[in-house]
Every structure is written in C-alpha cells, then in structure tokens.
Length: 273
Image (cartoon, rainbow, N blue to C red; front, side, top):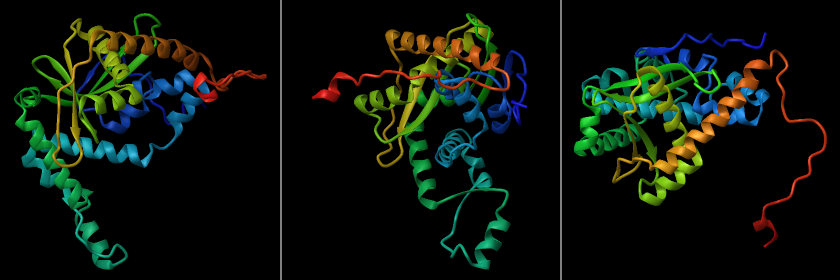
C-alpha cells in the first residue's frame, strides 16, 4: 500500500540515538518535506519514496564528520579515512576498500576542510561553549497544536545551556551571503519548526543559533540569530505546511496532485520589462 517502507510515528518524545535512516522513514511532517506537502499530497509521497539525492547525502556526511572533528576529535580516525591515490580499477584499491570497510571514505581535501572548519568553530568562544557537552543529531517528535498533525525534527546541536544550534556549511558567511542562502533554503522555517517542537515537549523556548561556516579557507564562521519578524514568517510558513499535511494524511492510496482543468497564469511584472 501507500506506506511502503515508511515507519509509524513513534509518539511524542526525544530520541538521542535514533539512526538517521530510521528517522527519515517516519511518517511525519518535517521541514525538509514541508515544501513537497505544500505542492501536493502526491509530491509529498513521491519525495518520501525517492532515494535521497547524492548531493544531500554528501553534505550530511560532511556535516556529521564536522561534528566529530569539533566534539570528539579523538574518534575521527576510527570513523573516517582519507582515500589514497590508487587507481580505482585496480585490485590494490579493492583490497584497500575491503580493509577499511568500517570507516567512511573521504578524500584528503575534504578532511583538510573539515578540520579547517572545526578550528574556526573551536576558536569562537561562544560557539565552543555551545558545543561543550552538547548532544548531536537529536530526533524529536510531537503533534502540532493547531492541526494535530505528527511532526518530526532532527536537531543538530542541543547544548545543555539550554540552547539549540545548527552549523550550516556555506560558501559565504557574510551578512549578505547568509541572507541569500537562508532565504533560499528557508532556514527560518526550520528554526520555527524546531522551536515549535521543543516548546511542545518541554515548555521552554531556548536560544537558537545558526552557525554558518565557510567550506573553504579562511573557513570564516559566524553565530546568527534571526529577528522576530523573520521567525514569525517562518512560523506562518510551517503553519501552512501543517494544514497541507492534513491533506497528505487524509488522502489514502490515491494522493491528489494539481487540480484538474485549465489554469490561467499571468507572469510577474518583471517579465514584461
């Protein structure tokens, strides 16, 4: 039926050690699937069934490796290994891969960048404090107040301060660079979603920081807090997504896509310049 490979909602609560693959298969509204839900129920189901794109998987691997480099550098070499420069078609390469099957393969340049970013984070006293004794990749589950739909989020950094933080790799961590990337990726909607869940579970509204860190030298990093209006816009967008998710849940085995019939569309004003 519809829920091929999807997992049932585990109930409200916090999971500190849930594998990422399990989290992603749970049937609930997340920030990363909200856009698809707003497009149509059919788009949400299609997204949940698709293999995750290679680029997204790679950026997750880098993000997780960055956590390790910052929080547990002594574990890094047991989890990650630089691929040697051996011909990939040779037996020597196959032997090397087999011998290192328990570690994640990165190239030497990626490892250099990961440690560069980790140094930037550790050099910043506030960032370093946020990362001290932090839990990472914390999965939270709750029901949305207004609609009752099941929701999920996977929070990058939960600091005992209490504060929530989310390192974001980027090309440009300047004010304008962050504005462009955050608006395009709707990071403020992600923040609103995380805050909603945390409030629902714990009745507290902790500080929330994004930590953009540049992927290349000089590995510039910032701590960013979003202003009130930005957060409100994020909350409104997530509220619309929750309404849309009601349709996803109610649609059974034949999810609706776009309405049928002809639609008349005018282009925005800039198109006539």
